[in-house]
Image (cartoon, rainbow, N blue to C red; front, side, top):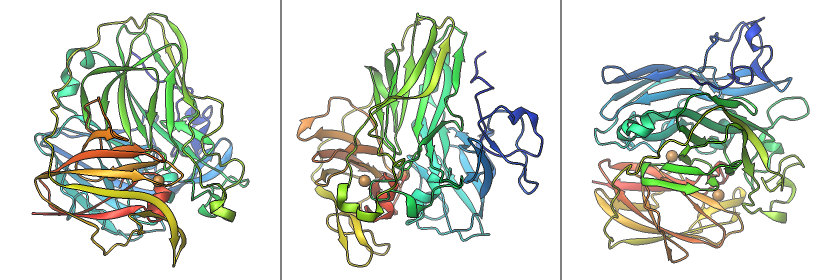
Amino acid sequence: MVNIDRRRFVILGVAGAGTAWLSNWLLRGTSNSSISQASDSLPPVYQSSNGLLELNLEAREYPIDLNGKQAYLLAYNGQVPAPRLEAKPGDKVRIHFTNNLTQPTNIHFHGLHIPITGNADNVFLKIEPGNKHTYEFQIPANHPAGTFWYHPHLHGLVAEQLFGGLAGLFVVRGELDNIPEIKAAQEEFLVLQDFALDNDGSLMGSMHMSLMSGREGDIIIVNGSIEPTISSSAKRLLRLRILNASPSRFYRLALEKHSFYQIATDGGALNKPVELSELLLTPGQRAEVLVKGDKPGQYRLLNLPYDRGSMGMMGGGMMGGGMMGNNDSDEPIALATIDYKSLISTTLPTKLNSIAKLPEPEVLRRFELNHGMNPTVGMAFLINGKPYERDRTDTQVKLNTIEDWEIANTGVMDHPFHIHGNAFQVISRNGKPESLLAWRDTVLVKRGETVRIRIPFNDFAGKTVYHCHVLDHEDLGMMGNLAIEA
Ligand code: C2O
Ligand code: CU
Ligand code: CU
């Protein structure tokens, strides 16, 4: 059996006074009798049974000892990252949510194709401090298997609440998991988050963050742990299921002396594995990769430098301090170590899925991403020249139709563009046809780039949003309302 090395693995959360098992860990809950107790185990996983996934979920601030400093993080059920939820196509989901934050909040189920209204994936809900809400929906019987996630989505507070730690995986188990080579693989989830502390050890407040660039912290954790070791002694492939749950930080991942074999994107399985020397994950994106190897040893999972652009002088006094880098340090950073004794190169699966190209639609819309001045708030991030307004409908589409959207980034920073509720295919980038057929819900649109995507608006009518997933950009206006009309 294989597991993340316990000495380095940290459940960020919650321990009673004198809990010895936490003592070696870098990040740990401080003793505080008012917090609930975490057990000496990996973070809990809630799985559906008999067609139902039901749980209580509480959002709350927790005192956490972070690198020897006390910090206040925000957590679901005392866990950073939040507990992993797992369901199957056709299952019902019922989440009894309590907001014990000091701010209003809500929950978004990023990437799930479920109703966007009512008590389901409704980003217009506002759950006030002290209030409860029961989320309830059914996962369609034909829903693809994949790595999805949940996080707060109340406009204006999204970046701040995510940066406090509120994010967890939502896994749909299905066909991909049953492919023999994948079923036999060792499955590891990697939730990537970053945090920033000020000199007093408190979480860096928005006043001190580079909101224009998008806040980044200098502390990067993987599953709540700084540089964990993932070890394997079994002779099987390693399946890494990776989520970028940081509000702004891009991860450009590489594994020393190894390739990745990507098997899934945001929206589930690719048609066949694709060999990559590195993997770029923007905020919000997920990927699944297989790793094979016949050179036993220890290898670092690196985050390579990536320049996503910056607002330069435009942010003026709002630019952050020196430690708030824009991920443009030229040093690779080790995120984790993969240690295997005899992971031998077993056969990769050949066929994973049968994604077909969508037919070319009649409707083509254009969206321009840029920044500019907003008379009321000053600097703003804009779509088609406008900052977000809750009560304006920006885009109206017909249910069960397909559209092409052209997303043009005419600004000075990269913007990962995300649409709620329906996955899409990338058709071209700067006019160059995209060769990889894949389902995504978030696509990077680099500065100066125009990306064309093709989206089917299937099954669920109602109002939802699209936005930049650098969540400070979203909170500063780079979001639009989408009405899907029956
Ligand atoms: Cu993960 Cu609207 O976002
Ligand atoms: Cu989303
Ligand atoms: Cu952006």
